[in-house]
Length: 275
Ligand code: PD2
Ligand code: ZN
Image (cartoon, rainbow, N blue to C red):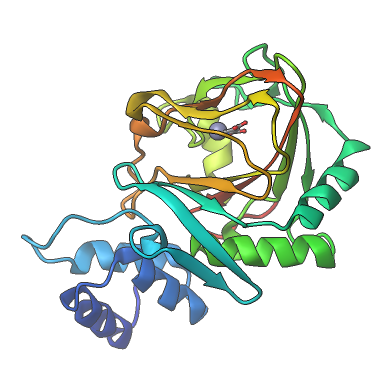
């Protein structure tokens, strides 16, 4: 027998749907009360009435407003696209935090990999010519502070996040067009979906100014974001019913001068148990 939310919670969800609340804000409140997000989402799907506006994407945070406040920080929204949901934000990390992430990562970089679509194993390919490293969630106080802030910026629980990934691209380094979600029909996706479910959103924070090139490009919506130290690009690709959005195809353009450092946070549908 599958689990279901209590009638009190279901009533509360119905009221909030009727008030026009977004799925993401409803899920966030329920998760805050310690309930499994998968249960919350399943309830929302069944409680939405026919004729009600279609399920929104995850985060309402980026749809309106000029700033996002976190406990310790103000982040400015400088650009947004609504479909797919993409936003560029300034001041996610301070220059000192960017420098510290680079300093801690430089000594432990390894060639980046991708998930093989057939086997699900990690593989080095020419299309992704960066080096990188990870920090486990809440690995230390510094990382914990950044994990918490990012969770507040993207309005999604920190425990659903993969560990912060740091990447370094040298001249010519790039990441050709790809999806950040695990393509549901690839057999290699399954083992990754079993831990935390699908990826739902990405925040790429730029840790340095790149002298030339290194933009994050979205070819299907003709968008190109230039790296700027401390700024970030955010995008969502999985809605509350688990559908993924191929319009979020994106890549990291080749670095033409200087080098490029980024920190990437991938959020999952539910709690992620580590790499
Ligand atoms: O390097 C980038 O700009 C970039 C952008 C989006 C990298 C990734 N995604 C990634 O590593 O998935
Ligand atoms: Zn990506």
